[in-house]
Picture 1 (cartoon, rainbow, N blue to C red):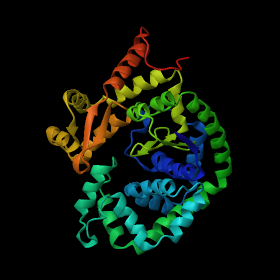
Picture 2: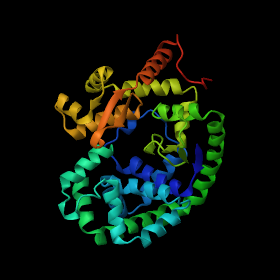
Picture 3: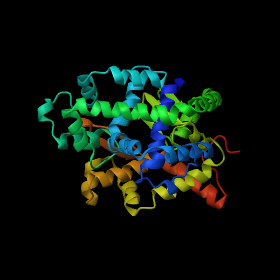
Picture 4: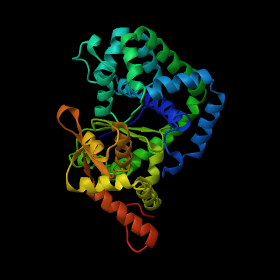
Length: 351
């Protein structure tokens, strides 16, 4: 496995975490278990105080409501091996409008459909089948972008550049210095026991991958949100360094909090009971409970983020979910150890 601390990824994570911390209001931030880094929290508070309402609005529109745009920045960095954010910005500046539009089509798996035949429902379905984010306005916005890339590309480029120059560049040196130091310490832990490091920090999401020793790139970020954990077909993993809290004895308490928070809704408990018997297709679950696809996606995302369930892509890119029995057993053992103190949970660094 390749362990990489990348300056371009750090900028990407700085923008992503700003969105998570200061823009995206749907998240239940007060209920999340992993503690925030106080220094970073202060940095984002300062950015939010200084940012213009116009730039904040554009970030919300272009990178939160249209989260696919944010995802594409990550893909650009990885696919083109960018090591610095300037390379990313220069690439966007030099990209033709057709290439700009083509990348959206590629990431939505719509390249085979003639442009004039793509409907909003096609975009919405592509998002639901391939991503976990469910912005109600995203399909309409992306449809406009596909039809008029000459209008949308300059807006996106200007927003990225403006945020970089005004709110990242002034503190970049300090962030990179801290990030480099923390990444070096993290790499020591990683090399000591790769499987334990990743299995713990990703709450078991990549256990099968780790057991098969596939070639995997692990990007590490200092400014990455404490719950940031994304991947590209399990061959690329991006982790925020503050997730390393999970490697300490606090892991037991964190897992207990995460378990009960995730299962605080009776529907999610029932989903576990259903998945105990067999795999379920996401839309099949939505129909079973009489919920919209977006609402069901919210519940599944929350359970998947906690590591209680896993998914696989089936025919036509359908998502099939199953119960992570080993993870659930570990959660229950940790909860018992935390609350009763009479058993242990599966953590190596319990000191």
